[in-house]
Every structure is written in structure tokens, then in C-alpha cells.
Amino acid sequence: MAIAWRRLAEAGLDLLYPPRCVACRRAGEWLCAGCLAQVRFLPPERRAGAFGAVDGAASAAYSEGPLREAIHGFKYEGARALAPLLGEMLYAGWLAARLPGEVVVPVPLHPRRLRERGYNQSQLLARELARLAGLRLDDRTLRRERHTRPQVTLNAAERRANVEGAFGCGPALAGEAVLLVDDVFTTGATLAACAAALKAAGARSVWALTLARAPGLTQSGFGL
Ligand SMILES: [Zn+2]
Image (cartoon, rainbow, N blue to C red; front, side):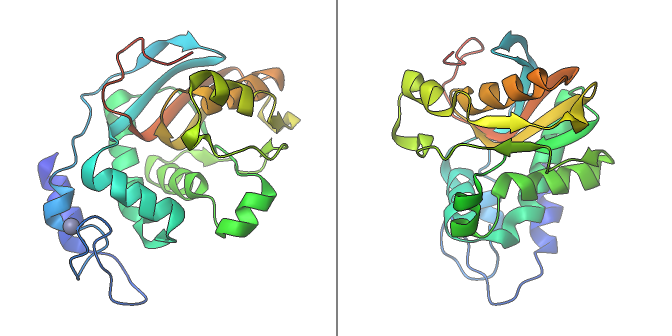
């Protein structure tokens, strides 16, 4: 796997202006080879056993160090150019965990947040994954209907209350095996709220794949 990441780093990214590593600020690449080499990929695992309406989950790597910086840059500093690289990492996680699912569905942003940010980072990741894995993408049917506070400052119980009932889903995913995609797994509250909406709309199964998860979570540490 190390070879694949080196190849990615060497390939660099198509850039509109000279990039700077989002983690160490070195000029040249959005995530330099040195920082990329520090990313700790998770061993292949499927965390089966339901949490909420989610049938199971997996993550590609630990959310720490340079990857944490990269995701932060990707999400809040407009570093959209990281999408192909982070998408390849997500794809590696998908290959390793062999999650079921035929339709890739990103965790949606509320339209107001989407306007503020200009893009949905989970949608960009989902698009890359669908392309690489040859799966269908549906980024319209699951919607965030209620504007919610950012989860980052909230504890587990507050997170769950914050996103409960925030999502709605149209009929187009009835009977489908859904692969739900988000950037970071923290307590699983957002994924669980999405899965509840998907299942209520008739989705057959919902497995969740995130690019990263907080280090230190135990197998049972879903926080739900
Ligand atoms: Zn760097």
C-alpha cells in the first residue's frame, strides 16, 4: 500500500496556483510526500453490528496529524484540490473493508451551509469513490432538511439530539443497498441520523464509509 501512496504523492495534483502542503506548509503539493507518509491507515475492518440504523461502518485511516490537517483544509479552507487524493484514500479503505453497497450517497449539507462553503466535501469524496469503484452516485435523494449547529463542539448526547430528524429522503433509494460516505467518523450520530432517513424511505441496507475516524475509538466506541 505504501507504494500506491508514494505514487500518488509523486503524481501531484493539477493546480490552479502554486500549492502548499496543508499540513506543514511546504510549497509544492497540497499534501507533501513526507506528510502523506505519516498517514496511519486502519487495518481492513468492517465494524459490523448496528449502531442506530447503520448496518456497519469502516474508515480508511486515523484522523490525526497531517490527515487531520488535510481534512480540515479540505473542509474549511477551500482546498478542493485535495479531493482526488483524499478520494483515493477513501477508495483504498473501501477496497480493504469490502463494504456492501451499490449506490454511493454522501452525507448532505443544508443548502445554507452549502452556499457558505461553496461545496460539500462529502459529496466530492463520494463522487471520487463512485468513479474509482464503478458504483452509482446519488447525491440528490438524501437531503438535510433542518439546519443544525456544527457537531464539533458538542458531546455525544448533544450530537445525537442535534442531528436527530435533520435528514429526509425521497423514494428513489427504496430497495437499494446504500454506501453512505462522510469525511470523519466521530460518534456516528450524523451517519445514524442519515441511515434512519434512508431506511424510512425503504433503503435495503446502509453501510457507512468514512475517510477517517478519531484515534482511540474502540470497536464498541460508537458513542451511541
Ligand atoms: Zn507536508
